[in-house]
Image 1 (cartoon, one colour):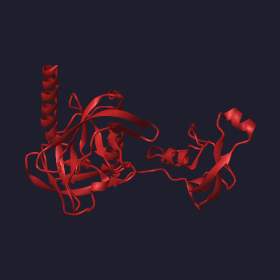
Image 2 (image 1 turned 90 degrees about the vertical axis):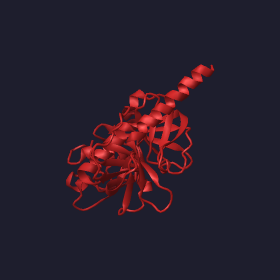
Image 3 (image 1 turned 30 degrees about the vertical axis):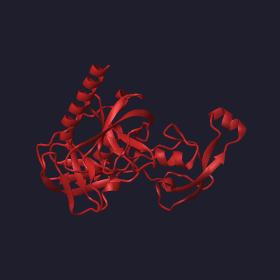
Image 4 (image 1 turned 60 degrees about the vertical axis):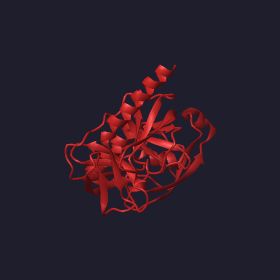
Amino acid sequence: MSDILKTLSDAMAETAERTGQSIVQVNARRRLPATGIIWSADGVIVTSHHVVETEDRIQIGLPGGQVVEGTLVGRDPSTDVAVIRTNANGLTVPAWAEASEVRVGHLALALGRPGDSVQATLGVVSAFSHSADEHKYFAQTDVVMYPGFSGGPLVSVTGEFIGINTSGLMRGASLTIQTPTLRHVADSLLKHGRMRRGYLGVGVQPAKLPPALAEQLGQKTGVLVMSVEPDSPAERGGLFMGDTILAVDGQRIESGEDLVSSLSGGRIGQTVMD
């Protein structure tokens, strides 16, 4: 048994040392520095939105000890992701694990660099929250999020980065923003400087459907249009106060939250209302 534990322990230490070459220190707030991950070899860093309290004088501590200045490219509070650009080159980009490769019960290391060296803590993947339509993929673990670990990676036993750890989305829970979400957000921020989301221009409230219609559609509620903003996509598309929205592009709408989540950036300019 002791040999097995020593082998596992040595392997985890080697993983932490190797993957630490893709982890940076982020100084963008008054208190303890946080962590970031190298996104591209030409100096792009991803980190947590909530640790970037200042948009100027951002300092990035590279794995080799060099400190470079960073510029905020953009941020997305809804997923707690921020992208920073530096003038560094030749950085080590990690391998990223797809969401389908990670299972409940997998061991994982949470790594951080709030100081000069990499720190680590061990945990187990305990649950997932996935929504492909919203590009939202989150994993929950039992790792202890030490101060300064936000923005750092959750690393699999094979050394692949599962995503970015954050303590800023759910109080008291250790969440990891997984690869599909991180890729979607980072790409949008790098291209547009912000997250593009669809806009309809209506005020709505839930509305219970008549029993016959509810049975036919297999849903009990839709959303009743209470107001339509002038010259909005809703008005131009022919929506009127009193209309009931049941679906958007085939996606069932039963609440205002469903309607908001259906208006992803990929649907901008499309005709989607049913």
